[in-house]
Length: 252
Image (tube, rainbow, N blue to C red; front, top):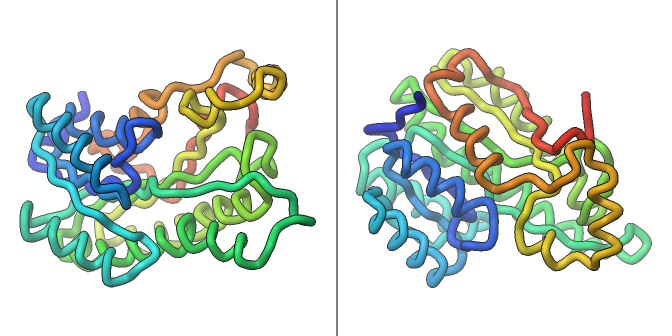
């Protein structure tokens, strides 16, 4: 049984009830962790924090722009001020854009990488000092099936490239910090039952489902459960790994 009692988890991009992040925060909270809800949306943060605390959790929220180093450092400082430690970082914040390479601009490419890769780098770097001092840490980052199969669900080539960068970065970091008691892993979700999926035209949705052997989108709780496992004591000998959660739409 996974138990995060006395553990502290930061979950970026967890302020919206429409995506995976809030479910991740709920899962860690239900397993006993103190949770830092970090997002750009204050109203969403407040809603998530209120929900977690009303259900017996211990949560605080903070507005963070993951592309801004000062903002990220302030998030980490607040976490240490309130809880005294950081055990888990879930790099969930991310953005996408449906555009072809022919129509893509350099600004489009920079915008996607600024959040999906450079923001992840800033958040990860900001927690490393504390985790190294503790000789304990779990970093779990969200990549995507698009990184491994070259798109095919939603998002453009810049999205696929940014999520592929997450995998390479995480594997290298896993080697760097292993002797500090820190594990670094990724999950690569496929199609997930969120608002993006629900907004797809019926014929597009049918085509995507046809490529999934299990015949359905994943649920946010399935993604969150895998992330919690990778952050748990039970996964203490797993590092530098990515777990595909895609219903069989891509198999290594």
